[in-house]
Image 1 (cartoon, rainbow, N blue to C red):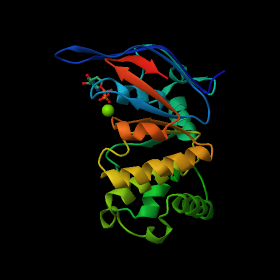
Image 2: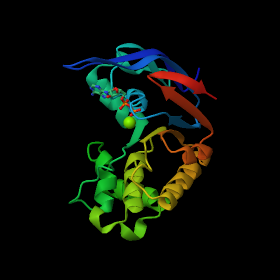
Image 3: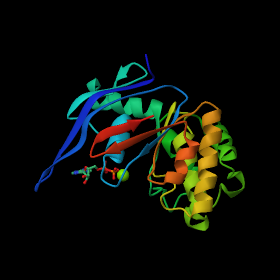
Image 4: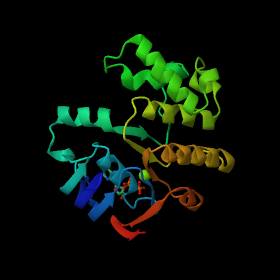
Length: 224
Ligand code: ADP
Ligand code: MG
């Protein structure tokens, strides 16, 4: 069985003005250790698909199975546990807490997990080494460049070693050279075994991924 199995998923948003069919019969399988790029125009359903994979958006119909877990048959509390155990999220706007240091931001996902302070420091050290920010651990986010802030967001997503890294347009706010550095970091993480699913509308990023899926109007039109 595949690590991720999405079967005939539909998502309809019922707005006050209109119904939007954001995903329309999407079926996909993704194996552990893959680096998948999800491409498509703005509004095609990429973010909806990603949040559905991460247990954040209930499909209108269809199933999402991750590591044998039927994510939307879980109750809210079980699904929160699923997210904590399985998923690291990197959002386009890095969503760092401005008054917390780099290290404190990175440790946020561990606050409710019951790790001792020594264990937390050890995990922070490991992940900050991975993204090359050990020296800057005590800075505040606004004392960092955009690329460094992105690396903090990636470190935070990875600190509890989730099997699945989901990134929504991780280079959307970065200049080309910085974006390429981030892509190389993803490639290295993937080579170390991290499963990554990355939404991007930058054609340049495609070459870093092992597989590219294109979505148009809520449908998968190309799954190479
Ligand atoms: P993408 O990430 O590819 O730009 P999205 O998944 O964000 O696309 O959106 C797909 C479609 O669903 C768009 O038409 C968008 O306007 C709509 N949509 C997304 N989120 C919501 C929401 N919370 N309520 C209503 N419509 C939404
Ligand atoms: Mg989006």
